[in-house]
Length: 294
Image 1 (tube, rainbow, N blue to C red):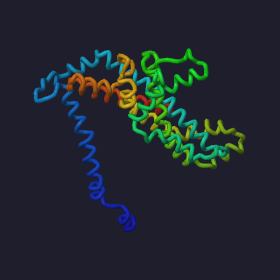
Image 2: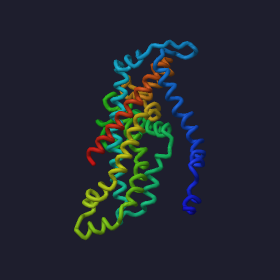
Image 3: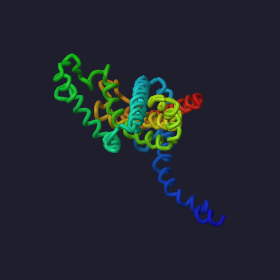
Image 4: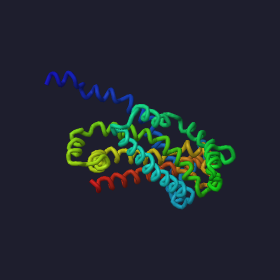
């Protein structure tokens, strides 16, 4: 008992250690959240004059077509990111665990590098890639004789969402790759040895051992993917500014436009609260689906 108490600090000390972090979290997250909730009940364009209007902002929000277009754009990015980021990261993780793959550390580093770049830089780089006149993508298509495929990638409403989603998927594959590879290291080698004795091939081992053992990790990855892509902003703001029209507008940018372009700060707060509620609903649905599968 003495040895245990010597290692483990008292509850009072633990609370004191947690206090600075809790204070910062309260100041940075909780207080702005409650302020946004408060302002969402007001008609407010800045300054001291606030007019209480109850739930009118939320009634307007429910009938706001642009808000729901933005939400559908976020959903598109989430679905494509779950398939692209998590799916590709899982496949690459499996490949990097194979004995015949050389230079694994190099591959991991190269794939992870985009994750450390700022979203603004990623958006700027891909804007140059997509440029209709001198962009790299159209140049390559022209070089290989696919002129008919040349498109205004960021100016066509029919393809702009696919165009802006590609850099988002590309940037964060490395993040999920590290998560999956860390989780795979905790799977016992004895399971794979037993599977080899039973004649299971590499992909059968992946399907019957790796995938079931990573279910918990995949659930966490999906939750992170939903939370991250519901607040996506920088990439799209740099590449398209939400256009053409509202075809690539996402909810965080719509909240920004309403608050700081139209100076409807009360309604912008309602948009932010709506975005928070929809994010929590999506995360809850993903957790319920995962629990049912278990």
